[in-house]
Amino acid sequence: MANASSNGVVNVADKPSARIQTSTSIRESAQTSQTSWPEIQSRGANQDVYFHAWGGDPQINRYIQWAAKQVKQQYQINLHHVKLTDTSEAVSRVLAEKSANNDHQGQVDLVWINGENFAAMAKHQLLAPNWVDRLPNFGLTDPDNNPAMTRDFGVPTQGMEAPWGKAALTFYYDSLVTTSPPQTLQQLSLWAKQHPGRFTYPKPPDFLATSFLKYALIVLNNSQPEAIKNLLYQPATTQSQALLLPVLWQYLDELHPHLWRKGQHFMSSGMELRRLIGDGELALAFTFSAAEIPAAVARFELPDSSRSYRMQDGSLSNIHFIAIPYNAAHRDSAKLVVNFLLSPQAQAHKQQANIWGDTSVLALSKLTAEQQTWFEPPAQSHPSATIANQAISPALSEPDPSWSKVITKLWLQRYGVMQ
Image (cartoon, rainbow, N blue to C red):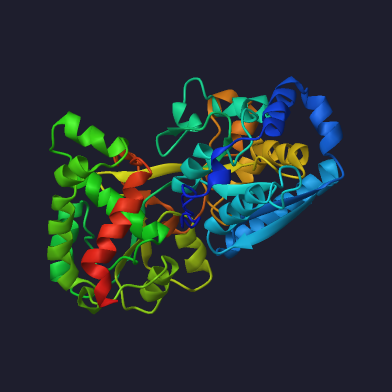
């Protein structure tokens, strides 16, 4: 999840029961495709919905609490936020239920998910199919003209998950310490040499760590022929790894001696980067949730001199999604919750920097003139909320999900022994 959600992955390939979709679930999919929205509203009201979502950010947690109040008021739905430290916890639960032939009373009604976990769950039929395009508010994402709404890390969603928000890799720094932060990956290497110990990144498989490494992998291979670059958007093979990965390891070998603690130690979570900036140990860091910077400044966790920007050579970008497991006990209620989360009201509220700052997935052209005003930025905001170079920073698409696993495994083999 992108974004703030953790991306630990459960390997379901060795679970025989995960390979077979039950005939009951197939029949339920057919029935769902024929169910009208008024029927879903009627059947979904007055129920509980257990939303398994990363719980590591207070702003996000408060937003989910706000959404819970809204669906309670509209549908008498009790939305319970089951806080996860890792998305794989929910995946493991659904997998265990399927192994136990629990095809109807699953404990996970909704899961915040994307990337590798989605690819694994989709491959092994752990998600409810063909429901997203029946949500009235899904059309507001303009999927016909915005194919990113139906692809997760390049994998077609096939109606198994609904887009919830957008994020991009954003750097931030203390402007009193450095007045000229690096604008490209190559400049970052030079900056690190000039400012030893003032930059680092987390240890894979942390989501923010793999995001930084994928950004570097894409940029470092930008001069390769198109046919080779396109291998990043296909499942990783021995051949494609040999063509694309050497330049990444060469870059990291040169960068690591100039990192925090000389690259001999890496923190385990992306949130520690922000703490090290606040403590003055680091002068440059990055996040997938740009709104966390002004929010942290307001809480006095970051210096008032903090500023945000995007790299000129590109920003790794992705969309994070919400899915319904195939055996969710309250499937119709979950659909009502997701439809609300895609409403202009919920998306506009979520986009406010002091609420969450998560970029909306709605196409403004699909909204009324009044609704469009809800998404306008406030007249006054802290300077750290302004993202420099945002307009000129190319959006870099996420590679195929297999690359995250490959990068993590090989990174740990090369550098993890020092941890």
